[in-house]
Length: 225
Image (cartoon, rainbow, N blue to C red; front, side, top):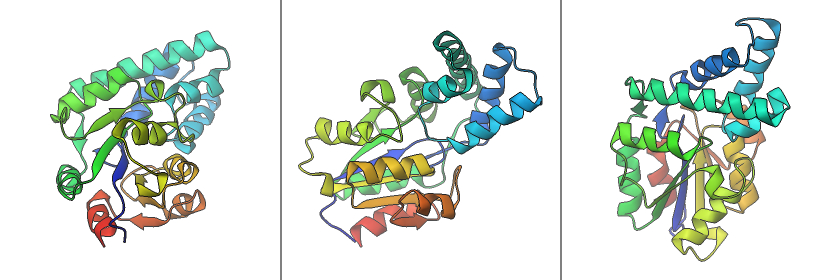
């Protein structure tokens, strides 16, 4: 497809890391911490929003749901703690073949950056659980780039931090519409959606996917094409 791609920016949960419902479980803990009754109409409405905005910075999601900054911060902290505990209990696994795909991309001479909508502490807990501390050239979370998805900040920060010359040398891959918006807004010529996470092909293409892949394992061949 393009031997000019020098930088590959990959999402984590749902793309390179299996989600297995962890986001929903952690959200339920956050909602309970804020006094939202489980399975109430309000809870169901909030959960629908969480599903629709998979990939977005989590603090942004909670600001939308709870309005007040203090409540949003409390909810975000409860979410992060719950997710961290789930990862610590062993509920964290790589998407099959993801580590090998990342190694192949780097073996092709490309820089690989892993991004997330979680905080740095949660991102690090996932990387540590998988033994992925050195799997990529760089890892980024929203607070290190300015804004999270759907804004292009993390992709553009990856470009700057890796010394990539042009946005036309970037490929972006993720499992959500927000990942696709991030890629298209950054100017990347390859914005690949994968079907191992939150959103299906229709949503991915609607938000700008140039390609839709069964999983991240297909990306090295697509780029090298």
